Length: 295
Length: 295
Image (cartoon, rainbow over all chains, first blue to last red; front, side, top):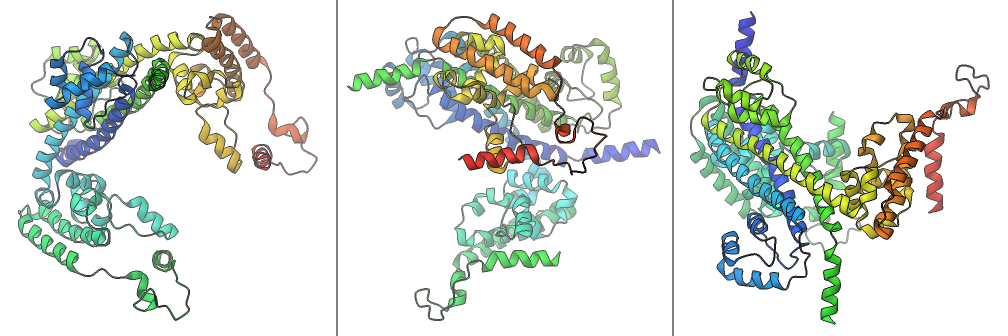
């Protein structure tokens, strides 16, 4: 019996999906840390060289590594750090006239080790990204084809397991990652959320605001089908799904946007003769309180 | 005139205090990231080797680096990762009987690069710590002697500059870092905070709860004096201050704790004959509303 229990647990561990979830969570956490590292580094280095503004975190870190002492730096060093040759001369000139503070030895060691960590975090993130790509394609081939490896992995992580994710209805998938906004809506009658994790996907997040919700719904509908194929049949049906999805999205983009705020007052917002006060609280609030009564 | 302005700005940059503030903030941010790294790593590695529990982050990361494949690992590798020789055999035995998942190649690369980053974060933190020690002693010798380099640097960072910190009254120093709790107290009448950054100092944070507030006040009083010596006179008076401080702390620890809840009902809490209801809301609430009227 003990043996059976052990092999049962072993089975539960054998799925790669759990490793994928760990990897996407690690990736998201460390991306945030990487942003912090970059912001702090540019603020810190700004004490010594306030004239320079580099928007690429890796370039900034490379520059910090070679360029801590204004009088000792060589042109080659800067060339190594900054790929753009045209900038090298202007950087050296700016450095000579800089009003920044001269670093002492201890400061150099500290800021350099900080810059090095920022580079190392970057290369770790790239390593994790490689793994995410491979594992998402292995475990969620259809879903990854429709979206990308990070969205697929994050949906999996929010759901908790492939089994749970595969049986979710499209509406739940659409709102995965928006739990907080959803419960706020149910409890306090705020506007209902239209997307959670899916918002991170460029095709949804960058869509026009009035079509974004409907595009998220179209994605969620196809993702729900893709997930079932990933988990149950293991067929690759994503190409067909993607074609259908593109069609419905172009339909959404062509269809006219409903003019919600005019619904109560006839067609023209400049020609209100019915004397009613505009009822701005209508939509979301009533929706919210309806929800509450149902529970 | 331009020249004068430039040299004025240059002067403002020349103080090392700004570098120290950057370093302590970087240190605090990355300590948090390091904790996240360790937690995630032990959860992730737990998929492959759930039987092992290591509480030292560096040991765990070292083990992950040498020990990703159960069948290929050598005793020497494990010895290198884990300093404790007695544990080596038990780890190998546990590994052989492990119910964890076997890693594939991609997973190995991902988790190893994650473990490596955790080690590198650790060594960066050590590098920053070295700098913090040196710079705090240079800029805040008296304050560092009374507390430690991190507390001194954090107080400086919360205040924003040496000048501002040096003229702060003891009561403000006591609550630096507790701004949120303070405004909650003023606005909503919650309990007033007794310590901010100072709570991180073991002598305050580990004190008995009923003396902790008074110990924080004693510290703040001496720190306020130490700061003035650090900024204005540059004398080293911390030894004398420390002696006085130790005396007042031992006085605080010996003095009886006031039994606040009995104040209204005579001396015994078991012998209430006055029939009044205990008024628990009294202290902080009234204080809060008084505050509000003053503004």
